[in-house]
Length: 508
Image (cartoon, rainbow, N blue to C red; front, side, top):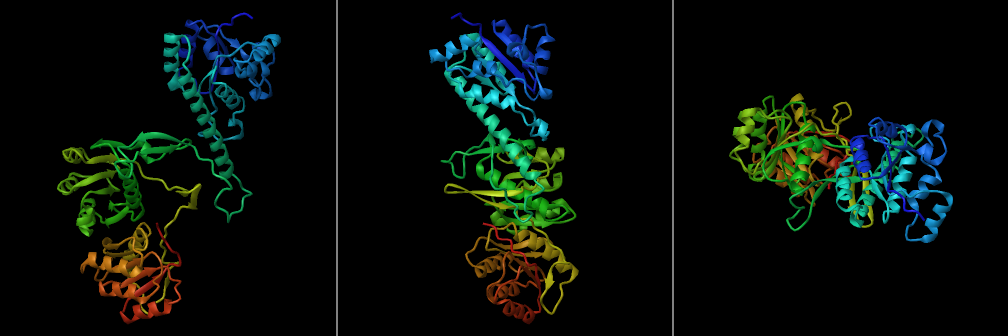
């Protein structure tokens, strides 16, 4: 059997760097095989390239849908070189070995359509990855230089490199298939409108950011991104401070979403352990920060601050004396940024507006819990006033603010608000009475004339009594308890107005 020149099959949609790779392989004496636009790009440089159709003896057909699906291609890729019978069979059929496959797929993620569903590409990629003991498979232009360097140095790819590239290849096709399944789910007009969850989930994520540590220093943490998408974190700019930890990201995410979901006015959220300890909206953003911090200044120590407006110097000066882990905003005025960067450990993050996820996922043994995202709305027209007294316009504003806040606080929770400032938050309690008492204690007289929100119904009147004792004059809750009449009567006794939304917002 004659010794064959090393052969590379190059067939890519993303042609970044492909000509340079082809030139490097040709300089090493490799034979180049290619198809379609890739072959044209290589031939334009004057390099010798064998068209796939010339190699197979079969012209492309069906508008390019069939070109590399041929035994001459896949036999050359898949032959097990440790088996003499495989090599003899290839020799008998006049099929040469293919030692390197370079392929990336149609851009289905950015241009989803039937014609963007690649068939030949994934087939070649998977074939080469399966036979990685003998064949190199390259799916990312970022690996071209690494592959060339190793071939120049050693004349071949190491087993470790081939294995790494094969894993990347299978991840590439897995992400591709996951994107296609998601597209079918998103465009299925025949699906039951009442079934908002798909029959199966095919998730593909890639690690994009290593974190200082996980939830605790002995844990390892990283941020992964869906392969077919991106989020605000991908475009965020960290101007200063230490590297981010798992909890820094988790709490910053909570703060950033909260700051953009409460009010159209300048809003500042202060988050500690995923719960707001301060929240306020005001026409002036620096005043909003001062009010948010004053909501619970003890808990704000070491917290995360999110601001839904560019940060001016006055806000930076107000924040400077407070130990803060992260501040995130859409922009920072130059003098404000300079002031904040004086705090060496403060992480200063500039970010775009967050989007809303469609699904929420949590790990359990053997799988995931999946639910649709909790959408929080507050509309006077759909609320039901159940007391003798109607809320005033000012009370309606505070009810709106309190209700949206309560939906983002760990259950059981009670939130007390006055003039769009959270003055008392009782979070994560096993009973609603204790949540009310904590909120009232934190309010410390500041809830007088304000609103109280409960994320679920009051099972007993004692929770409402705590709101009345704190000075709240209006309450919002879902309603639905067997003791609603008793709770409504207690509100009437106290001269309070009460609104039922008919919708619970538990958060665990």
